[in-house]
Structure formats: structure tokens, C-alpha cells
Amino acid sequence: MAEPANGNQRATIAVAVNEIAHLRDDVLAFRDESREWRKVHDEQCRLDRERIAALEMRASVHEERMRQTTGVLAALQVVIGAVAAWLGIKLS
Image (cartoon, rainbow, N blue to C red; front, top):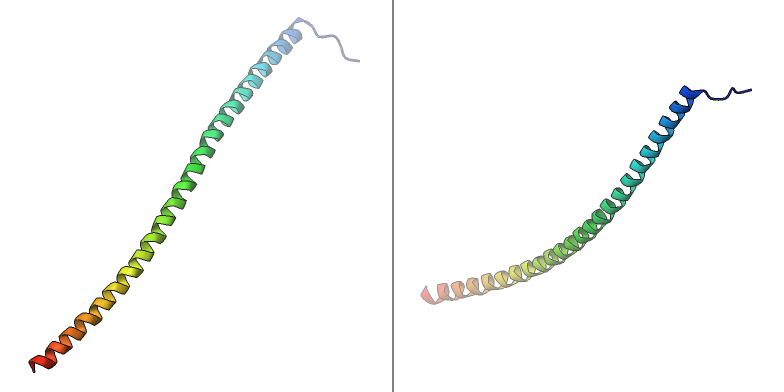
């Protein structure tokens, strides 16, 4: 059978209970801070995903414009080549 706690044991138990209560408070405070940080972090991630999507959209628009510009330049080269050939025939 367990013996009743003496004065020193009661004091040790009281100190341990007090420490456990402080640790519990620290854990709860950390959990609350972590939730707040998580909310901020999640919002930042959402904004980053939106920015990436916008940049990808702009990149696709630029790629389309590059294709159009390349087509126009090719057409100009054909026209300039035809004019140069015509001038070559006329000047010979």
C-alpha cells in the first residue's frame, strides 16, 4: 500500500503541477501563434499563386505576340526579296 505523501513530497508535487501548468500555457500560446502564422502564410501563398497565374497569362500573351511578329517579319522579308528581285531584273 502506498504511504501518504510527506511535506517534501507534497512540495515537489506542487512544484511539478505548477511547472506542468506553465508548460500547458506555453503550448496553448504557441498553438495560437502558430494558427495566426498559418493564416498569414496561407494568405501569402494564395496571393503568390494568383500572381503566378497572372504572370503565366501574360507570358502566353507575349508568346502569341512573338508568333504574330515573326509572321509579319517573314512576310516583310518575302516582300523585300520580291522587290529586290524585281529591281534586279529591271536594272540588268
